[in-house]
Image: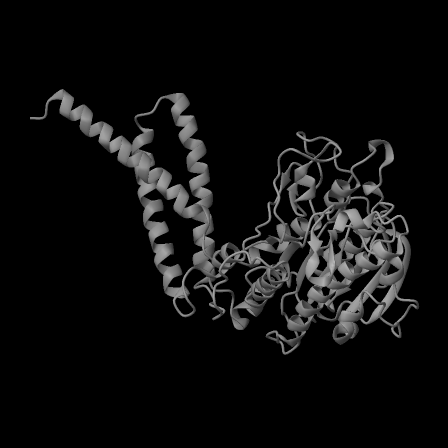
Length: 465
């Protein structure tokens, strides 16, 4: 017979054991690995079942991404001199020569909610926070309020078709707390995607972590088995946690029972995610080495993140992505191209020719990186025989127009890709002062989003896209 003391000690050990496993279960299930994307035959069947949400005429999924570069651009070097499909690429856009037929230079788009108004300073925070939301962000370092971003509005309706509803990437180091620009929260500067007015979707800047989240850990050829084992472990832990929690619930008081219910809600959400992963099957191994981490060289970092975005689209791991190359107001230097001064400092050039030249070189450098990405997208075949770029819509732009004056009209924006044949690239089109959100609404329509009549400060769909 056990003494009362022995029984109490055993009960304590059981409670400790259960608690450890409970927390371990949460930790093991929070970041699920990616599982195999739908094969073309399954994909066509799934999109037919879903009513063809965001697909081409052949049933292939459309992809969309939003890439942000900081501090505006030198207008004279950015804009082509003539409209239409016979335009000559400007100095800054020259690196896109091989993709000229696959890009649309979109002029005359504004973000008036990023202007100062009564809010005074803080144009960089407003530029970032407004870019994909179209709303005037609240000027506060603690009480953040923006709006849902267009990528998340799209992901809400098409995200269930892929293992990851959306992908948020960054090549910048940032944080979400504190004052970062004239009284605005850092959250506005370091996030493009917002799932609600108060909830930024914090982007990931480590290529290795993004890659392993998408495709699993291990060397090429090992990832599928590793993902299977991890999923089985997660399932076993989850089963244990649920069984343990049910027995624990019988012994708890009302307040503790309520707390446990909150935990169980999270567990059920994790279970749903596991079931979704199992539904999509094994992860599709891209058979490329796992990135080592964040490269010391900025250009390599950007190239890796572009490559990961391409792989995510190619494997149908997601159809919606954002990438923040650097936050607006970034003062990064570019000594490797002969610009040792800070980007932001130079952007206030006050018509100094030397500073304008250096800013133009930085603008050109960013476009060069984007051009390499487009070349790879164009060279990658989709399941219908078209290029991945043809079946995509990629916005490249910034929330500041002229960084010297902090203007937010006639923003430097490109739209790459043909949207599966629904977009007409190879042109320079001036839209004459329309909200940038009108373009986003038109893109959302093509992605299969329903019942989105307005977005941000939109006044209607953008015609002639």
